[in-house]
Length: 257
Ligand SMILES: Cc1cc2nc3c(=O)[nH]c(=O)nc-3n(C[C@H](O)[C@H](O)[C@H](O)COP(=O)(O)OP(=O)(O)OC[C@H]3O[C@@H](n4cnc5c(N)ncnc54)[C@H](O)[C@@H]3O)c2cc1C
Image (cartoon, rainbow, N blue to C red; front, side, top):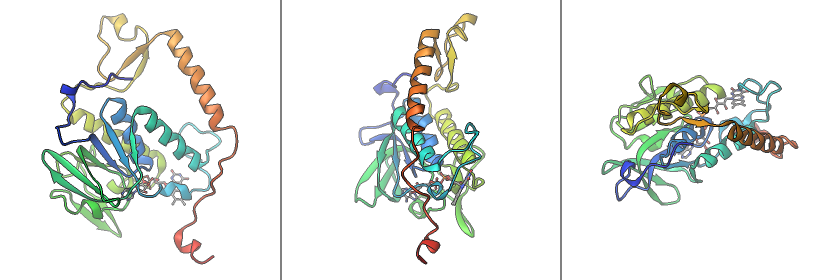
C-alpha cells in the first residue's frame, strides 16, 4: 500500500478533519473510498441508509463471480475493503454540503458538521444536500442527476459525483468503475504525485532502472505468497455459509403486505 502522506503533504488545514468526504456508501462511494484511502487521503464515508443493491436477489453480472454472488455479501466485502484501505465510516444522512474556508462543511442529520477538502457525491438520486453549493448543476430527467465532466468533476471545484447520481447506467459494475475513475481524477487533481494504484512483482520497474512510481508497489515472491495465502483464507470465510439477510423489497410492494 502507498505510504501515508506526511503532514506537509496533507490537503487539510487546521479546521479540516478529512481530505475526502464521500457522501453515499453504496457501490460507487465505497469503490471511490478504496482508491482515495489507499493513496493516503484521509477519507470518511457518510451513509444514511443502504445501497439500492440490497434489493437484488442474486448478483450475476459483476466481473469475477462466475456463479454470481449474494449482493449483500458483495456489499459487505466492498465495505470491508474500504475499511481495510483506511476509510472512516459515519452512519448518518448528510443534509447539506456548504462551502467552508478552502473546503466544505458536511452537515449531518445527527447535527454534526465535518470539514473536508474534497467531496464525492455518490447518493444515487438523492441530491437535496447539494443544493446550497453554487456551481453544482442538477438536471431532472424524471429523477435528479448531477452534471459532470468526463472525469466526474462537477461545476464546483473540489466536488465530484460518482455512479448513478452522475447519470451512469444503473449497473453495479459501472457504478464501481465510475467510483474508481472519479477517485483517480481526484487523486490527479490533488497536487501530490500519482501514477497508478498497482502492485507489481519485484523488479518490474526497478529491474529497468526505474523508480517505483508513486501509488505503485513492488513485492517479492515471499510477500506475494503471503498475500495470496491471506486472500485464500479470508475469501473462504466470506463464502463459508449463506448470507443471513434477504433481499429488501421495493417499498411500494412491501407496504402492500
Ligand atoms: C431490485 C434491483 C436489482 C438489481 N440488480 C442488479 C444486478 O443484478 N446487476 C447489476 O449490475 N445491478 C443491479 N442493480 C443496480 C445496482 O444496485 C445499482 O446500479 C448500484 O447500486 C448503483 O450504485 P450507486 O453507488 O450509484 O448507488 P447505491 O449503491 O444505491 O448507493 C447510494 C448510497 O447513498 C446513500 N445515501 C443516499 N442519500 C444519502 C445522504 N443524503 N446522506 C448519506 N448517504 C446517502 C444510500 O444509503 C446508499 O447507500 C439492481 C438494482 C435493484 C433496485
